Image (tube, rainbow, N blue to C red):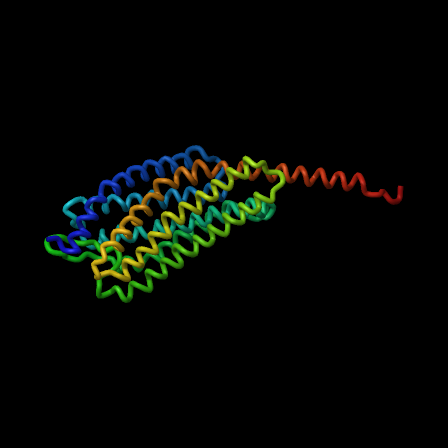
Length: 314
């Protein structure tokens, strides 16, 4: 009869094919996106800079999936030593939280460009986006650095386990850190993204110069961003903390649910190239057309007011 731990290992051994496919699609998609930006984009405005860094994050994230797929290949056994175990987990977290904050930056950049277009045109420059990108990379590295301490390898029978969180003895110290990652690494950028998306939709709805079709396109793009975030990032962080809290109890339902969210969060690196490199270009076009029409209407109204105004002194 299998023990609970053996059941968990057996379940993970079934996931290596999915993780391997995610690695292939993510490397191809993000590699092509980076090539497209470098080879074809002549003007690197803030939106392109943030999208390029997001693709870079996703590419590094995808590379961290390859050792994980090899690790899960039956029989599950980590054969690469403690340093590579720590490095693989560290790279995973750095690029996971780099992705969440670059998504927030892309959303905030669109918010400023659409809701405050004159401010964006006069004050926001590519240099600011480059500085913000550097800060995000440093911040993601800083909040992920404790992983280098907590992640380690353990012997389990004839196999070696690469811990994704911490050993049982260090779990009390790891638990507050895990909650910190949930709040700051996931919750904060989600709130910023949600605020930006809601503000954009409200601004576009109030725009008299935007057609119904263009408004519909913007709503679909914005809803997709929020939906993907809620589908990939939030469930992973919630069930990761639930799994850590109940770790050692042998609760298969919680563990399997967490593993499913772990697989789901990997899909974001496969889908981002389509959302932020291809579809993202449609929304600024729609919104710019609407803003241009609205500006023309405002100019016409001013001309009419000037024509109707009394001309004293003549």
